[in-house]
Length: 254
Image (cartoon, rainbow, N blue to C red; front, side, top):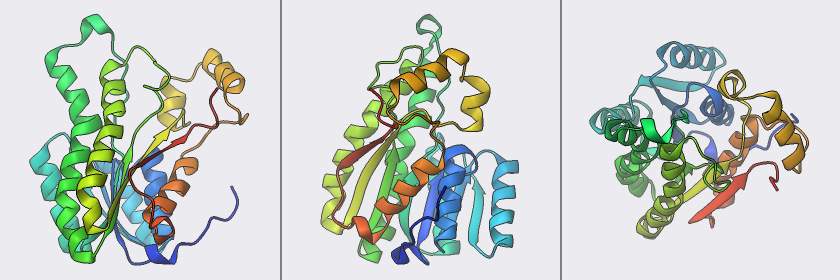
């Protein structure tokens, strides 16, 4: 893609990206680093996380990978505290970690359901809670929650995922109301079908590809960079009056 915009307000800012080691998260992490932000990467993929930290550091960027299972709230809180101690007060949080594993209705157990909620929704709230004091001390901040268009399309075969992602919208609006008086902005982004390696390897079929080119206004595959760029905008001071919003990035699905 073409040269991207520069956001001076992001330079030196401490950013945390959950699920930041691969896919959309890796692109978001890299884009923030290229804006001269200091990026904390939370993920369970140690090999990918360590490699990303190393490559960004070699390019002269400030990045810190911390192993973190976001479904364990105490671990999540400790990881965020570690990033804050090492890099400084957190000014931007991107709640990106998720798992879109498919599941049949009759095979879902209570434990499995709780796991879907934990990875796709619960950590958004507790990560926001954990960074709130840092953002208050800075005089403001930006929280960006990652939703999905899957529930808007009424897709089946992953009820735990779609239920969680629809709830991200309500959570975003509630957090925006609670944190607005402290100049902390909270928005959500709902990606369409983004062609990460995982999506291409597990879910993309010839029929799926045909559906994309039939139903998307933009006749091309969407890629992680298509999400990372708007995330930069919502994190920057250019979006200083933007909060309580959900922005759909799906190439114009009709």
